[in-house]
Length: 368
Image (cartoon, rainbow, N blue to C red):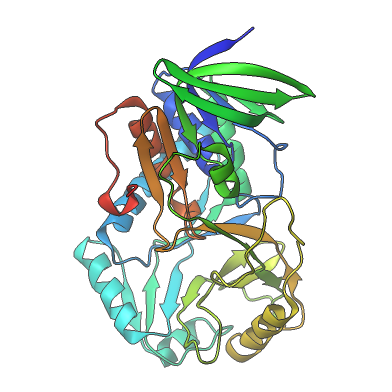
């Protein structure tokens, strides 16, 4: 028997759960379908922490960040789960970028302070600096695992139906609705929705029909690592380090993860992969470069203590997100390794697009 629902969300990672929560709290009946089990490690949403990084200068990201902060707070109030840990963020390595971001944040009334390298080294003795340092105390980390649990709990509390182990094997958009064939428990059944939101990360191109005008998405396997502090120093901020390419392959980001160490990673350097055929192991040369970087820039960390993490980035060429609608299909994709902090705001934008055909995301997020 074919099931009919107004809204279906395909993919129940962070963005899918956020969209489901946003739709359900607005009073809509919504079903979320996730092909894998709850808490799986095959995508981009697992892990204890994500950088709540506010070091942006572009208005469309700062607007989204403002919404995200209020929505994280709302989710925390609704579920009783504190989701942000605001211990501050340091951005350094490029004085021009530091000045630009500082100006953008101060212009919006955000707290932001530029320190000299020596001032920063006195405050954060576990790190080394050689340029101006932007300190933004209103940043820190999102408790990612707790956030997923809170989003699911919040969505179910509003009546959403979240189904794990349900794989969408086909999707057919017609004038009167979207038919999805779903496989679960070795059986297939059809589900018809008025509108479908696809938030399937690396699997997005395989879900959407070939005619959908999706720009190129590149899936890479990234391997940051946790490093052990040498001493019990509680003062660890989150950080962005903007590095010269002649010495290192990319910029570095990181944050403290209680119980696991300090997470350090190069941004968007991993090999292109099939998300269903990953190694889950770091590239040795990149792991060696990360070890050398930590040895040079983190006197407070044991550079030989790396505990690698495997995750995927699904990136657009511009590294801007895709948040848009065509017909009865809404897509949220291409979060390019910097999307998690925006999760509840992305869910809000996608819910707007799903429920209002006249809604539009900011221009840089739209389909061509």
